[in-house]
Length: 336
Image 1 (cartoon, rainbow, N blue to C red):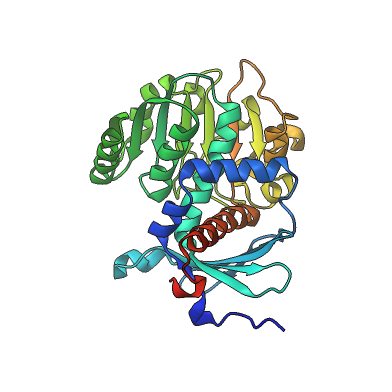
Image 2: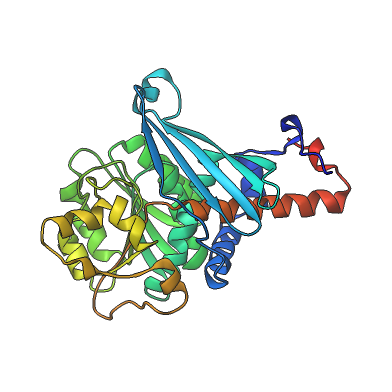
């Protein structure tokens, strides 16, 4: 009988090690491969949200034939006042045959990698070809991640960083410039008035905010611009307006999760501004070529985050870790 590994012997993959094992381009490739071979979404129950006095506890399990994983993430809105992160979490990866734990992974780092990588999978098939002008609304980890993700699938000729905190926006623009992308900043309390020019010029717009209301006027969008919204997974919150949903080719990760959690889509359907058939397709169909953008219309990808995405990237990280340690003759339990 094979003994299960002791918890103290499990590898702990932190943020730096995760990005070393799975660069953004590798995460994109792994997600695309999983979608093409039919291995995902596998068994992916709905996200469970537990409300506490301090905020939310989110539980996201998933299973494939090789691995089972569960992400436990907490969202504590007041943590900033305590000098602590708003979002924290851990990912437990297990063997699918024995259900023995195989690795612990930084859950926030995993989310910060897989969410923009999923967006890149969609952008690769929705955005116009050639160099693109990018607008990123939001200066948190997802803002940074989406600059990197878009650059993984398109040449980014310029990025406009949008945020209410000018210092954070300038810092992110400097980071983009350091990585070879020309950048400017729109920041302050009067964002809607200042956003018209960069939105009109944009080929790709990423919304990565905590806003519960639309963050720009979609009438400014070009006819074939691509918009990605990742900031919300709640049915009563949205980052884009109903006009965009009515006008665009709308793609979601999965229709069931979108109709549970994607307020950007749920709210205009609920208000009778669009019909339930407004969703043109899901991410598997987009990757397989079953869903294509309609010429002359914007493209809108709404992401709420699905557990299979975490499992794909986590599995890739462990496979690469096992391969690397085996090649160097290092016992796996000796890491972490």
